[in-house]
Image (tube, rainbow over all chains, first blue to last red; front, side, top):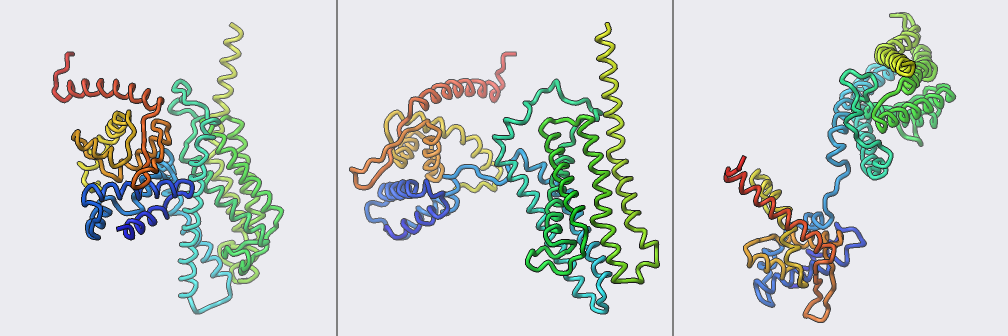
Length: 328
Length: 115
C-alpha cells in the first residue's frame, strides 16, 4: 500500500517550494491514507490505490493547486506585452536578414550561397528569440516590482484624464515598446563596446569578424539609450508628457541619429567600401551614411516635431490664460 | 479532476469557487482534518474534490482564517484545522453577503423585481 502512495507523494513534493515541502507531503500522505481506509478498509489493493490517485490528479497539478495562481506576466500586463511582441517580432528578423546581406556583400567569398542563407535564417531566429526573451524578461521584472510600482505611480484620477487629442497623452503601448526596443539596442551596444566593434556573432569569447568603430561614440549612444528608457518610464509612471520631457526625448533622438552616423553607419560603409571597392561606384554608395542620417533626422522631425510643437503651443496657451486669470 | 474544456464545466467551477470557501469556514468551529471535512460536507450535499479542498485548507490557514495543529497520538499524524477569530469575523461578513446575494439572485432569476 505505502509504496505507491510514497511514490505519488514524493512526485508532488518535487514541485513544491522547500519551505512547505515536508509539511505538505506529511499532510497529503495522511489524507490519502484516511481516504483509502474509509473506502477500501485497512488493506486496499494496488488497483484501488491507483484509482484513487488517478482521481486525485497528476502530481504536478496537485502541487500547482498548493502554490495558488502563479504566472510570469499577469493578466494586467499581458495585453501590453503581446502588443509589444506583435510590433517587434515582424521587424527583428527583417533587420537581421538585411544586416546579413550586407555582411555577405562585404565578405569576399563567392559561389556558395546556401551556407550564408542558412546562417542568415539561423541569425534571424536567434535575434527573434533574444528579442522575445528580452521583452518577456522586462515585463516579468515589472510584474515582480508591482507592489513597489504602486507606491510610485500616481493613483488614478478620472478628472486628470487627458483630453482625446491632448498632446500630453502617453501612448502606453508606444512607451512600453520604446523601453523594450531601447533595452534591446542598449544591450547590443554594450556588447559592441565590449568586443570593440560591430559583429553579428553574440559570443564574448569568439565574436568573429569585428568591424572596428569608435568606442567613445558607442558609450555616448549607451548613455542616450539609458536616458530614453528613463524618460519613457517617467512618462509611463506620471501618465503624461511635459513639453520639457518631450523636448529632451526629441533632442536625444536627434543627437542619437548623429551618434549612429559616427558609431555605426560611417565605419560600416567605410569597411564595406574597403573590402568591396566595386561597391563605391553605384548609387552614391559612399554617400549612404549621410543619406541614412538625413532620413533618421527626417523621421525624428515627423514623429516628434509635431507633438513638440503642439505641447509648446499648449504650454504657452496655459501660461497666457493663467496670466489673464491673475490680472482679473 | 473535472474536465474544464467544456464551457459549462468552467462556469460551474467559477460559480462554486467562492461557495466552497464559505462552506468550509462554516464547518470549522470544531477541529477537523481534511478527509473528515470532505465527508462532513458530502453528508450535507456538497461534494468537493480532494485536490481542491486540501490545498484550500492550507491557503485559508496562510491567510489567517484557519488555525492548525498536528495530532500525533492517533494511528497516523493528522493535521486538524479550526476557524480562527479572524476567520470567524470573515465568516460573519461573508454569510451576511451570501444571504443578500441569494435574495437578490432569486429576485433576478425568478423575475419578481418590485420596480
